[in-house]
Length: 414
Image (cartoon, rainbow, N blue to C red; front, side, top):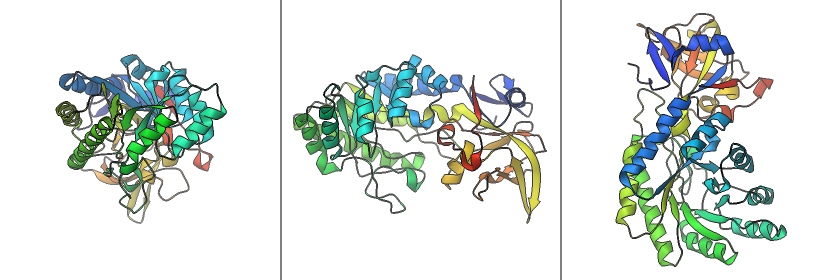
């Protein structure tokens, strides 16, 4: 059995099957490049979180789907029907959630560097909760609400910076003073301004009901201890707020955990993480009614793949390239943007093979960094073979662009 097999992908007689259909058959039917998504795998991932909470707490569990990972309407409807909530980072995402039927009171708008126009659009949507990302944001929120007297006043959560950041790349670390490459972290209210932010929210007529944090994206097993340190800080801060007289309805521990991208990856222990959060909350003196997390990659990452066609093989300076009919920036930008990002690539017609060559899978864009995988051990493909790039459900279609005026691929969902 291959490490990547799940309810979505299977290897049978050396071929890749997407649920019960050959991947090459799907490519022939719909064309390539093509995103393929699985509701079955999405539901499997969602229910694992749901069941983990149910086993360890009687509190309400809010699973906020981080829509920035993938906003395909079919995926959103599936999650809505399961009782998910939405983490939206723009007015456009709020609208997309409302359009597929999410009620406003199940949407949390967590923007950064928000504008008055952003706030106006979100305030117009009844019951959408707004996360305060900066103490200074409250002044803008008050001005916007007062300028449009007919707008409702939303409940708010305060996103604080717990001083601990974690992520697979410097650009996706979202807490702490600076990222690992020295970039100042722009997110969240610093620790000594959290209580003043709650007080200012009340003064301005907003009702603060939640405390929120997000450490970054792409945690692995080695991040567990640091992540739990941030959990402890969150609970301590919530206790301080309650002792200061504020009522907190929920704690939102953010996202960051994801699927397995490679055979070597030590995946983050999500179930242990949820169990630990529930235990720590139960052992504390805080009184809340709900615990929230914000998975994006975890839910949809391994529920999607990208199918590509090999146009020809190229040998140059001792390198062997499989030249495919798509570019990273138009389909899967992660490997081109984040050097640590890896996506398993397999030949759909020859999953199992003996002596593997090192193949660089090259895209069709005018950019040296446009490679889906560098020196990937795989069977040497032939012209016309279909390759599958795995874990393409998260931050692939949502980040795709028209660079070089190339088209963004179609999507199908099973």
